[in-house]
Length: 554
Image (cartoon, rainbow, N blue to C red; front, side, top):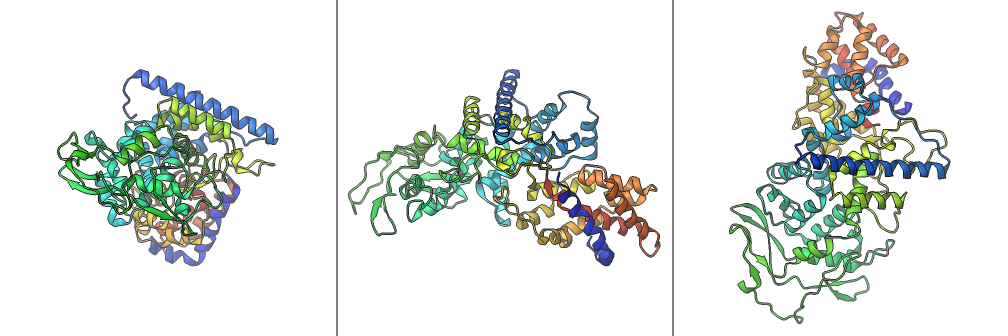
């Protein structure tokens, strides 16, 4: 961890409290199917780990870089909990890991967390935003009723990613647990362009938005026909409410149109996409009227579901474009890498075009092959990256290392809204409510999950200072079962300071920090009863909670 993050965050807040003390007082194991599957997953992840370690080490050698040292246990367990459980560890969890004497404890704890409901919640949180974008508060309830249970089941049952993509894009559930898959298309409310602009980055790692009016100006492999071809695959689909729930019906006719480029030339919107063949479909004469009839459809397996066109554009897309597409698996591998390592092998992770080249093409290709060979095993891929040496490096940037794409040190990452909201609760109460009101406020303030560039400003700290729900949490933490209340009861002030640092930052206070906080706390406690111990500790806790060190994964 860089000293800049550690020291810039806490000290100024304690000094600033001199003039704002009164204000601060007022603020305030998923079950898997059989031993054989577990063993196969271990073999997959071990191969992934070995490949990562070898390729990244070769990159160090070529660039004459000496990477950072392996991180300490206290750094590792905080990082791992944030990445997998979506929160910092409790004091008991941290202590249990630190005291664990097993030589393979890091891998054992990786497995433990990957088998937890925290993993399910955290990855569902992340993929909800990555696939759907942040929802307005009114839509969150709808997602929780439909989309969210499906996502959770995907990660709980470790559903293969190719199967997940098929379920989402075909949107014809075969089992009750697949029902929520339709929401990816359904929420976009019959807007085929919005669907196309979401499908391309979510499943192929490219952005095609700017190809609406002309071929991509820089990434020349992305053409205007690819944009409108992708639109055509979904422009016959329509939201339909059935007795079985929301569904996507599909017409057997229509959807034939033309698109114009910036020069005024017009072309038919054929069924095609980047790096794919064109799907042949009889095209009616211009202005010819098509007649819809029952002969063009097949009945759905469930009578409550919409009938199915004999020529289904969505089915053609899934079977002949998505299936085996060279970008599909690679895009998922790169996204998971970006989630866990701070940036993609291709950066940004959703612009995997000819302009943004991979930092190590052989590594990305190799991981993609292993992912495909594993049967698109999500958990095996995650496990392999977490067990690798680059993931476990210290976050101090070593001398001579300037390029973050070499992954020679652990890259600092801002916490997502959900991670921050739950970590605040763990720090203050050693427990977390996944639906706490502060998380909704944080989602509004921090909409991005994997930002291309990390920009933090005083507004983030002011938000944590002034948000009513965060203020209420601090006030509640002043009770005996909360962090502030416990600190105020400690007779040993130095021990209380260390307890505060452990609960919030997962580490003991450094000597300079201990001296500073002790001086602050003792000076104010000496003024009793003019200043109550609760208000003094509220101020100290606020300073550490709003520090950069707490708000980053490092």
